Image (cartoon, rainbow, N blue to C red; front, side, top):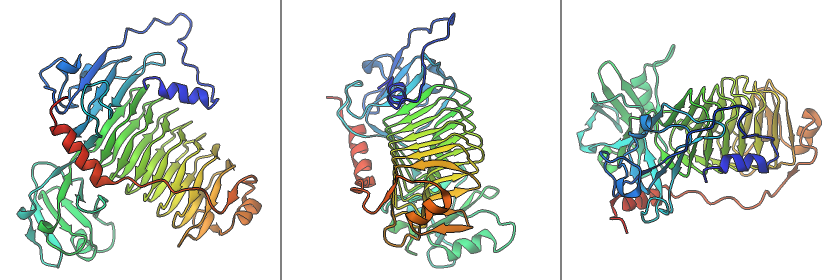
Length: 426
């Protein structure tokens, strides 16, 4: 598991070399740390399963290059600002141990959550049907989620440059909210006009789950993550990071890569995020997304703003609201062996960029309008037209793209994580 990112890249033949430079000082031996929801204490040293920490917060300052952290099953309302990174020969690795094999816990999801429960009875009616308000001075509210539904987060209403004021917009839009930072007043419109007491609500308060800033060679793998203000896994000026085999939903993006080079996303399931399943942005060069599944986002996988040389390989992208795969001002990309089907607006979006695309499978599905699109300029309803006018996908096919991956049952994940965190160790 520790070397999964390196092994995967080598297997893909992408030429990654992890050998230390000639004359380089050898890395210090890596240490192993443990976090256990059911049996840890934050006063411990974290060095053995018997002396594990209980929360994620101690990780921020106590780990270094070469260390591996195993997090046991349970539900963690917590986050980590990663303040130290790894090296090519000694990455820093955070692993969700869903099997419990490393931590000694019973199996179960390792669920990290950016939201906290709220007493729904505290809300007061605010005039229009379905609109309610609550004074929340404890923290800025970054989002609202109905836990009893599919766990989409509510749409946030911002101060407009022109147009109706935010409270008027909340009145007319179900499943929306506005938080006034000056008055600390939260106003929301429920999804069905019912009072908040008819639902189980949580308020999003954490910006990111694993927030990796200016720290290279950090791997995050094996976690379930939901309901963060921005992204549960965020790489910012953090080269050669990796997110592997995570499940992320209900945030702005599932994974956000900003101004970072050589970041790998492999085997993740990313769904019901308000923007994209994964987003490479602001010059994130050489980003690789391989073997991921993305559905019910606005866009499945997205590269933009001079994030050159992106590679989308063997991903399954379906039922996203705008596009399965999108390259926007991100030249030099490669799209190969992907399955793109039933994305509602288009399967493949291009905007002011050219990429190499081939050996993919496209299918429209109910309600989909095009195989490919030049953003807001021209749509290509058929694969033949896309080939002819864009010169791409000569060996790609259209029609059946194989079985649809099974969607994640978010309520089952929540139930099992709570049970795992409450269970005594075996």
